[in-house]
Image 1 (spheres, helix red, strand yellow):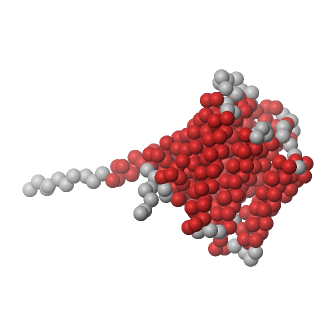
Image 2 (cartoon, one colour; image 1 turned 45 degrees about the vertical axis):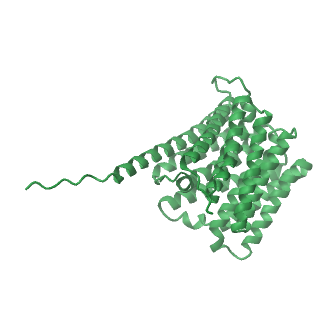
Image 3 (cartoon, helix red, strand yellow; image 1 turned 180 degrees about the horizontal axis):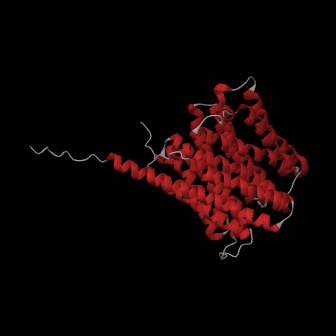
Length: 375
């Protein structure tokens, strides 16, 4: 008996929950930046990180994996993370919201189990490691750790998942010992995240080294090194990937060179190097490939995609260099506002491109009636 596929309207509903988490997380960012925007009745600032990483990115990852599996029950994973994000927005860091986020990771692990039965391999192992890191982050959050204390696990979720997806694409062109290098870097990254919960002073250094080892593998082995010399969409994807790897390397240097941090300018810089410079670059780069597969709607490539990508990296440079390193509050604040604007410009451009493509497809699918010739 063949599994029933996931209807597109159900995918859209789950994607809308992830989008709600993104917009709410961006609004929380404006509150954290000290802008004079209306403050909600719940402490939205306290859930900014989980909303962005688990509510938005987690829902996207789980949705893409559910579509890849192709069974309806798999949609429960992104549905739980999306619902958990909605509860966080409505109630703050409440127990039900955190439990739903954790349930989303458990269901994602079940999806990976089914995918493992189809085709096991190191790439899928890395993605399983990412889902386990998501679970560990929510479990530690439920146990009473603060969001800054679980950041290494949140970062491992994102980095391991993306690295696994890049390994899938690079397996045909890997150098000798490429897989072994990848697994060693993944093990070091996971060991570092584990050590940060047990021995924070030592774990942060090990985690930074693990990040640097993973970035080194990505830079050397990723096909982006070759496709950056292409044109059109392949070049755009490569530019987004390589710039994201550069930001991740800087985050690794901060962790490996300066140790643990849970507040202040260095925390702000480290956090946003990973989750804006790296993670958002990955989302910007992969969106023209992933969204059509998930939504069954074309997202045509256009040079406009470079605009929000450039805005993201320019404003992040201002935020980190001027705001965090030089200690200029205006640079930190307006760089952060520029980060939010870059994400909104990208999302708005994607929605507009999808609508235009759908209208174009509708017009071309209409067959004009045959009018008999007048004699």
